[in-house]
Length: 298
Image 1 (cartoon, rainbow, N blue to C red):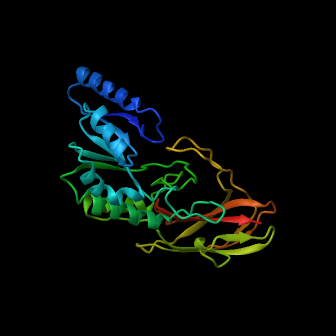
Image 2: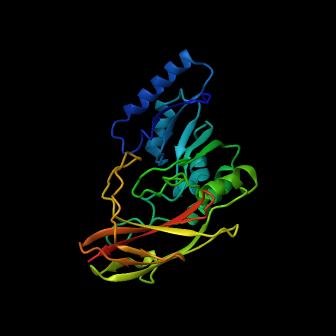
Image 3: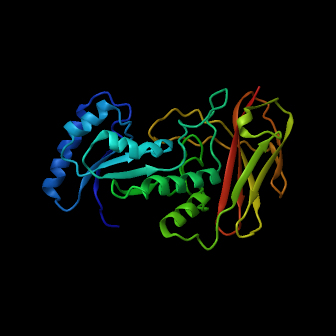
């Protein structure tokens, strides 16, 4: 792959305390321009667009060729932010994707409620079309996050692929957004997920050792037969910010009795605490959907 541009730092404005970091970025940009006049420079900001930060960008980093921003749910406000900021540079969206784990509703005990793979796919496409594609005079280009898989609060929150390489509906959505056509074979759609006949929004609390029904509702645009896999994990206790590495909580075996039609029975763990039940739906052609429900054992 060829070098496109130099990104100096990733989200240096996230929880920063010393504004001299922006002076350093500007000095690095000057150095790059001296030794490489062929490639532009930028820095990737989480960018709250607060007046203080806008002022730092204008006054402390004048050598940059463009501004890069990384937005999730808040990307819908980006055109307005750009207008208000008055920074006379092109913008690049270096990250956008599903609603972030810090932006979603949470259970009463603080567990973030993760959108399903289908809800995420709709979010990718909507924001690309309504924000990025609709503003070509202000937004130079964009990068969907994440073309891969990673653990960040869960193993499925940001990856457009599963750990086994299966393609999710977010990839299909971006295939359509970028090309105007759907892929030849599409990913399963997640239409619902219930534990004890309740949706995730109910804030599900279970009794230790008791048995509870679980049901995943899915369909396939191509009519492919679907298979289901289930996993139970403890809730992640990670507190990292900015995408720093997290450990994946181990699977808890032996507590799920699964059928082939999207139904299962969960035996609640004997130990009180916070858990998360995952379901994965496969079409046999390298595609998958997924959903999960956080729950508490009293």
